[in-house]
Image: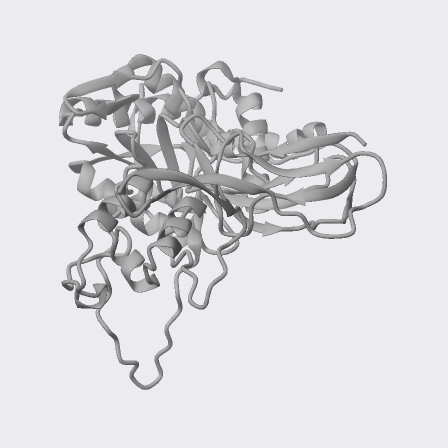
Amino acid sequence: MAQVELVMPKMGESIVEATILKWVKQVGDTVEEDETILEIATDKVDSEVPSPVSGVISEILFQENDVVEIGKVLAIISTEGEAPTETKIAPAKVEVPSSNGVAKAEPVMAAAVTSSNPVQSTGNRFYSPLVKSIAKKENISQVELDAVAGTGKDGRVTKKDILGYVQNRTAAPAQSAPQSTTVNKASAPKPYKLGENEDIVEMDRIRKLISDHMIDSKKTSAHITSMVEIDVTDIVNWRNSVKVDFQKKFGQKITYTPIFMEAVAKAITDMPMINVSVNGYNIIVKKNINLGMATSLPSGNLIVPVIKNADQLNLLGLTNAVNDLATRARANKLKPDEIQGGTFTVTNVGTFGNVMGTAVINQPQVAILAVGAIRKKPGVVETPQGDFIAIRHMMFLSLTYDHRVVDGALGGAFVRKVGDYLENFDTTQTF
């Protein structure tokens, strides 16, 4: 009987682990090639893991809420023979502290630990199987574990954290810990008594991640914003003249977003020091221009898919990329790598009828451009025969940038440069 290992897929350059949200298939179930077996989540995006072959699930090695490293075997698929008659959960070797403080290897089940009061992942704080196993071995309660300060990614408790807690543990229960102890990046909430006509709605997982990300960005970067108002009458008239034929020819709409992206990519080519990140006192200059586009989801949350090497695409290519990423983002079909590696972000606050906005920088980038609503306004038109007042399509651009590395001269010049490219848009181009 041939057996195929289903491994945790690579989810992007900076992602080293993912959390199992749900097993869609169970031991004994038949699966077809490319059929979804489980759903996983990282701190960036939720995703589905398909089956690499057709067969029968013979073993499941991790359980829901387990945090699994990239490349680890998740399940075994048998490609021939009958389905197994009983569930098999493979044991895994993990290190737990012995009574003399020296770590030793003991076999534990990779499934969730079962006891009278098993520890669980809480809120947006996940505990790996190893941490849970050590907590069970040392009789660490849920309250104690939640109070352990995590030094891992997103405040996660690591093996070192929990072993350090075990070593310094005293008889005093964690319930008496000071109020400053936090469960996650946000401060521990004070007890709240509901008043009349009030409800409590807990943030979903994505909203919690957004909350932490926004707070981190404001703590990290010195935000400052520069704005310009530009005349986009030519763009509006050009789009109106081509949109019907464009949709007939290519089967999709042409929006303003790819036009904005094209102008941004050109401006970054002219001013590459806006396309950087910060590492201590070092400035990391990004040679690839990877443009993120903030996209609202049906849930009310936000995600930022990335157009890789946007400067190498023409307007048609950018239109294809924008429409494809936006459609799949709203259907939760993005691949993890498609929201990684952004070097600059564009957000369209005009979608909601807003004239302008001051956005929060998408770390580790150093700038984000907000484009406002296009409105008809009286404007001065300069001609060789003299100036006159006419109805023009006007909009605001606002660039929020990290004042640690981007001064007002560069920030102001960059947003002006984007405006110049838009105001001088080539209206003679065809598809």
